[in-house]
Length: 116
Image 1 (cartoon, rainbow, N blue to C red):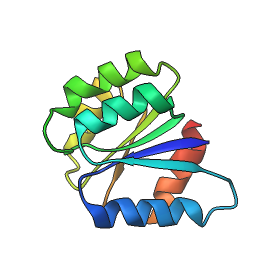
Image 2 (image 1 turned 90 degrees about the vertical axis):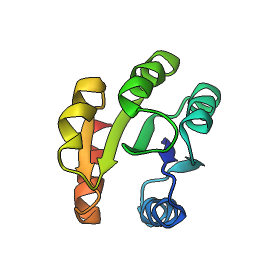
Image 3 (image 1 turned 90 degrees about the horizontal axis):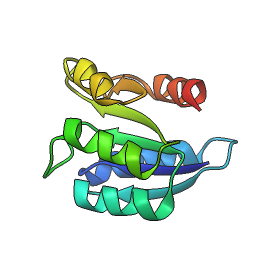
Image 4 (image 1 turned 45 degrees about the vertical axis):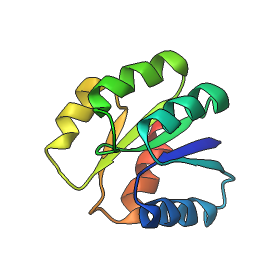
């Protein structure tokens, strides 16, 4: 499964990459640090799954998610945030699921397995 992780914090990118690399299932992983880089990589790589920091720098993700869905219609998007109130905005914008960054890693893996 091709996965794109979009987060502007290096420690979060590294932790998510490490988590996915530890799974039995094989993931092909790439990263984006901002919205412009994210859109370019979605168009080029056509990932199957996007782990998206809802507070990604330099753009409002509510505006970016519909663009992502047009660039890669089959992509599944898991929005992530430390702010629980971001869930409704993320789902309304077109994210397929939401995970709090405060949740444990099992929750994220469960969501990934559910939406794929």
